[in-house]
Length: 289
Ligand code: GLU
Image (cartoon, rainbow, N blue to C red; front, side):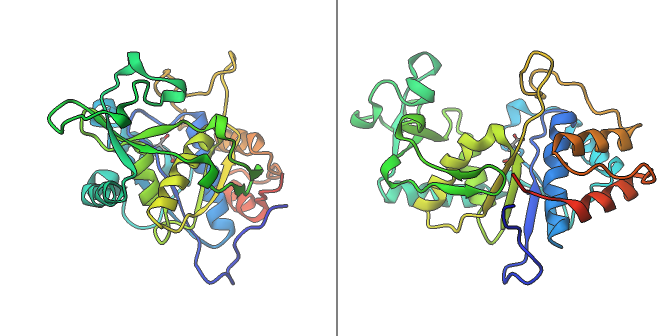
């Protein structure tokens, strides 16, 4: 079994669930919320709710209310106030400034049509003069030989393979918005959060976020990735692909399904209420492989 933080650890556990406000919670996002909640509570830690609202064009009105309502219906109550990433612009801008001063960024004029492998710049923009007035994104260069692997608490050792890491990736978009990779890298670093538990579809992002944390000398949290929920065709459930919203009238069934998906011991049939199911799940939570 992998290690979990205990109440005796010097840094108190701080975990989070970080949905984007792009639609209601579905069975897949419930699994991510549930896993991060159970891990935090099992370790007597704090669990916060951060709304990743840095992409207004993708935001869907009413999502925050729908997400918080569904979490509450499932007994997943968070600590402290809701945190909105949109309030952190100055933090992101300062980080970009530092990366620029360190010579880690370059302007890129690529559009979707000119991208290379895994979304890297496809036109050698790094070696071109691109003025600040020209439409461009900002990209950070990667150096796989300097990137550290890490131990995923659920998946075990993760090594960095040069051919799976993009040459570079976007930290500020062409439309002027901060990229998810930048915002998450900064907001997830310690002391904000000590443990990040989320879906395995974000493992690629973890490499990028850890690279930014490394460059910015931020202390990385511990990461753990849980299996994603797939639809009948084998695709990840996602809000963009129109996954059905959770039926909040049957939270007990949804929680039991989530626990099954996460390979947890089933709560006894005597546990009927949301609170009873969660109490059992917190106690018996295991991150073993
Ligand atoms: N907000 C992003 C999402 O909903 C990121 C989640 C995360 O980093 O946990 O996919």
